[in-house]
Image (cartoon, rainbow, N blue to C red):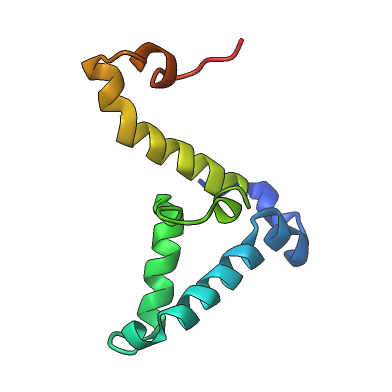
Length: 107
């Protein structure tokens, strides 16, 4: 949901707060690394798919630690993905399921 506070920030501060430069740099880097594949379907489609993956939280899959920890959204995406992958271990039981696969609550 879009908040009214977003309109009160100057453009550069809003972009910094949302880490837009981080994602733009990564998108361009990914574009350059995969330019042969991208030539088949176009740059606009690449950017659309890249930013959809950021929105969905799947952009962190198979990425290096420095990227995963670069932004709060990346870290949250990693934790959601990790939980989705390993929650079946917690549900099905296992030696360490109650320790490593249970959601953590802080009081």
